[in-house]
Amino acid sequence: MNLSELGAFLRSRRDRIRPADVGLPSGPRRRVPGLRRDEVAQLAGASVEYYIELERGAGSQPSEQMLAALARALRLTEDERDHVFHLAGRVTPPKGGPASHVHPGMADLLGRLLATPAQVITDLHVTLLQNPAAIALLGDHSVHRGADASFIHRWFTDPASRRLYPEADHPVQSRAFVADLRAAAARRDARDTEIAALVGTLRERSAEFGELWAEHDVAFRRDDRKRILHPAMGLLEVNCLTLFSEDGRQRLLWFTPALGTDSAERLDLLAVIGTQDLLPG
Image 1 (tube, helix red, strand yellow):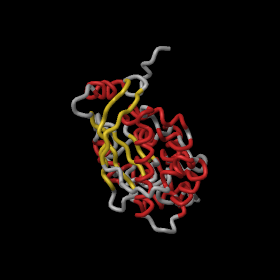
Image 2 (cartoon, rainbow, N blue to C red):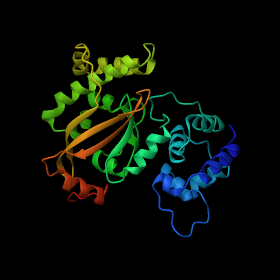
Image 3 (cartoon, rainbow, N blue to C red):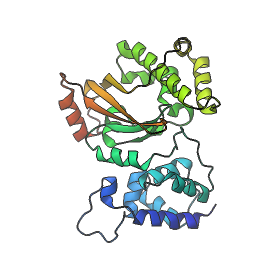
Image 4 (cartoon, helix red, strand yellow):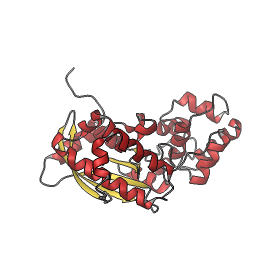
């Protein structure tokens, strides 16, 4: 572990990024060519004081989640991300988990989708990055840890996760999730332990999953029309479109209003109010 070198490396990466590269206004009176410390902290979801301590090489050993968030905020390449983990004395996380490296190109594209709900997920439906509009529409998925980081895992083990969709749509969603997971499993190496563990756990804990898995349906989710139950906006009908990474392990999802519905106006309103709680009480 070398926290002083980590701090120096973070400073060097911060200096090379222009605010416009990460969707921030440049402003007329900037004293630094790159990002300010408070801007990196904001992008990574950390306090300014904590990030300043990191750059000074002081403080405690940062967690894997914080290192992954900093790598995304600073648009690090995969080699740079691994370097950060080594300097912090952390084991480089495997691909597919919540600390997975997000390709800078996908992160950049996500940052340009300001009013459009969008997020980057893995092929196991672990959410890696959400823009504010996606958090307003779907909720903040960064709070989930371990196996629950996968929405597929939550879908078949936690009934509360299904409140996102009308009950009448649950069978269709279940079938689509299982077919997509089987397609992802086939694309990965047959000895992949991560996906084998997920499938094994779901077969043990969910009879519904076991029955659907035994049917051997296979189909990637490339585009869907979904009905989403929002606590403030009510029922929204959206198109969910998908852009796959080259290796298929990551996907950029973005949500547009379905034609012929009033969802466009309500999505526009949601983009304005964000995550403010409009419910009575």
